[in-house]
Length: 174
Image 1 (cartoon, helix red, strand yellow):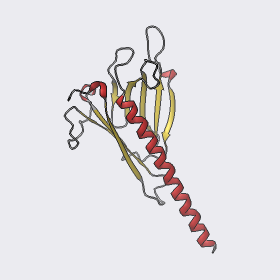
Image 2 (image 1 turned 60 degrees about the horizontal axis):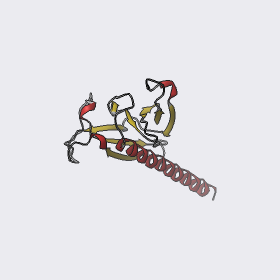
Image 3 (image 1 turned 45 degrees about the horizontal axis):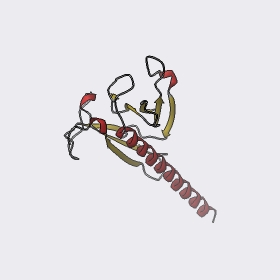
């Protein structure tokens, strides 16, 4: 009986861990897609996409409805996905790294399979992503694939989810 109880407890713990990971992924990708859709030129006049790499994305988007565009940085660092938000300040306006508010969104990220993919205006659902280094001015569609594995040596298996969005302000293939 004792062995049975231990097995039930382990299975319950594994399932709870998988559900938490799935929730983190869904919330992160929902937020990511909202941010990307709203990306536009910064308050300093910078292009909507500041940085596009396989492990990081920096865009400008008005996320709080105050007409100012915040700098938003998604990064894969130390086995986690973080999101940093910097409000524009000063006169002339600037985005100071010291003012960044950073939050960890997803933990236990499998770094080898988590990445951003970037596509140009010709993307029709089956074309290959743009090659590295990315020319930010060609990007129109961004996909973010995240894999989470709370404990690679124990079940459940890794969970992978992807979210993608068009940068609406840059859309040019009407």
